[in-house]
Image (cartoon, rainbow, N blue to C red; front, side, top):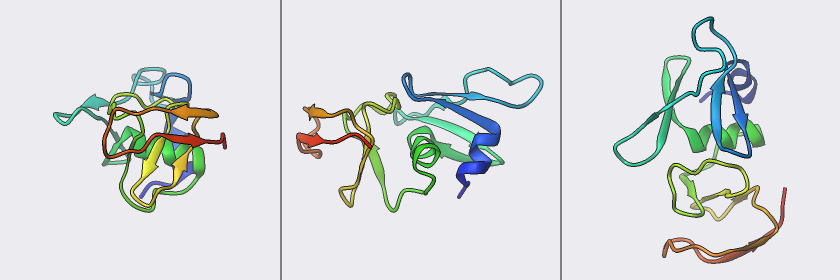
Length: 116
C-alpha cells in the first residue's frame, strides 16, 4: 500500500472537487489523474499499482490506509470530494460536513456526523 508521503509526491488531491492531479512528470504535471472503471469508479495507477481514487483520498487525508472496504456515503462512485465523505464497513466515517447526510443507498444509514 502506498504511504501518504509517497502519494503526495506524485498527486495533489483537490478536496472540493475530489479530483487528483499529477504534481510531477514533464508531460503529466497538472493533468487530471485516473480513468473510469466499468464499475463506475475512478482508478489511478501510482508507482506501478492501480488504486481506486476514493481509497487514495482516504490515505491522502488521514495518512493511513483504510482498515477494510470503504465506499462513498452518497453511493456515487465518481464523487470523491471530501465533503461527501466515505464510510468503511466497520462504520468509520471520513470527513463529512456537519449536517445530516441523507442517502438513497439502502446499505448506508442516514447519519449525522461531525467534521474532522
